[in-house]
Length: 253
Image 1: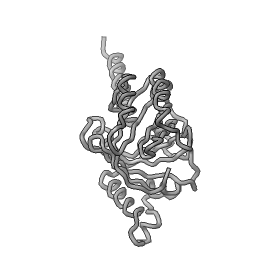
Image 2: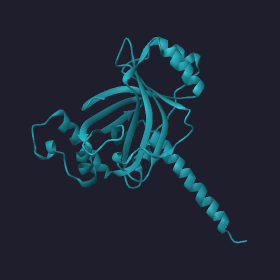
Image 3: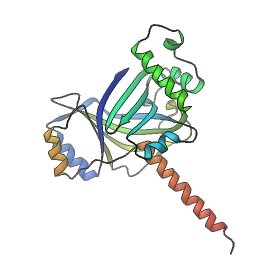
Image 4: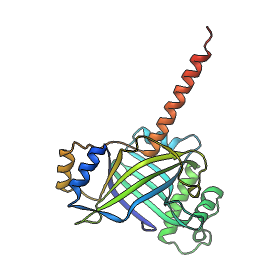
């Protein structure tokens, strides 16, 4: 959970049934180890335009898409460190920019337009200020506002022979549209069955052959899945059904 960084890697997602999850864990045990944090609570505040342009574009599955979020590991206090991330994806390759800020500083910046000290004092350009400049451009270009809180429980694993090779398992994906602050707590509505696990494999190069074999044997196939996008589609479908039922109820006899 490092602070500021820039990287690119290939990320693919897989939705696992409880049976697949148990079999997959047993199969990868000789090759992977759980990281030092164990089970973590990941909390995110996603930003979008007032009319949801970014998530709607993402759901159209373009070759290029981008998003911005504020992330914490656990529920933070106002003085705790959080991470402001700009994530861009071209095909399966992810390019991420991330800076570490105190929650109070991040909220002053994102909610009230008060720049972090490094930017406002005009100090010599650093990696943090370079990333902040990119994020600032994104915010002003898209006119972003906080739109949704999404949290989930995660375990992260790394390769025993290659620590840069990573896997994460997410469960209890939940969201809310009100109380849009990371410090409010992680109470929210569950997206779907808690038993399912979202596997994400993060690799800089090709998959090792042992993993390819395991995925084939367990019939685990990649899926196009976005937490924010899936929640948005679910909400949109619910609204459509509500309007349809209301119109049917109000039709004249």
